[in-house]
Length: 290
Image 1 (tube, rainbow, N blue to C red):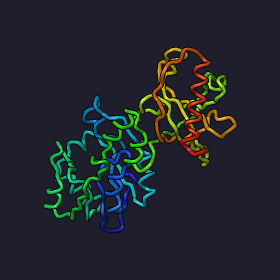
Image 2: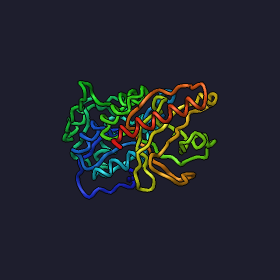
Image 3: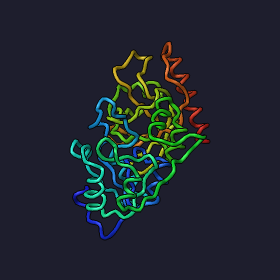
Image 4: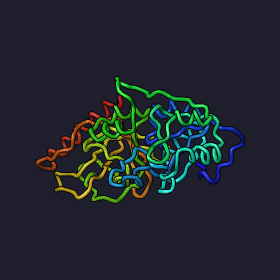
């Protein structure tokens, strides 16, 4: 990724404009039409309306990595008060034409920019840019959007969210030391704290993929407050790798949410919890066809 002030284009460029949270299938359709993606390292709402800033589907680093894997150059800058107050014409002249040397701009039909979101695709066309408008991508009769994907995840509909994104929603965290309750129950787990600023799916038991140092394992996990052991103060993700033996403490693990098996619930005792864990594990094995 290249900060805007460090970008040195070798000639006229085609530039896709957007924040691209989640880099979902709609974003992918847009990015496929450009050479360069211009974005922000922070969500504009963190400046414009901090109390309304959404939890994100992807961190800044994740967004950049995904877009670059598509063969696109990522150019970014911070969204701050000065940028928010920039007139649309100034943005077009100084940033798009001056720093990016954009000749063709790729965007959705509802793209807005500049002070008070006064800039439109029509204005950019009047200012001499070639404009490519990419229609939204629909699935199940609905437009795919970052907001819609967040809602799917918070309702526990991880498999539908994955269909919209074109890949499963994921977290990458360092395994923390827990209370070793999973091992006592016969199902050792890796405890992952929640990533700051990212969407937290609905509590429950999920089937997952867990990637450790390049190797992918099938997994089943509980995301929640562990009510059987008393109400915890914060949710935690407890991941059981189905065919793994070894120490995971302090190692980085990437987990991908494939689907939810059930809601989290409280059990009367450890025996009933063990029985349910065994059923969850069996259901996960069936999901993976093992």
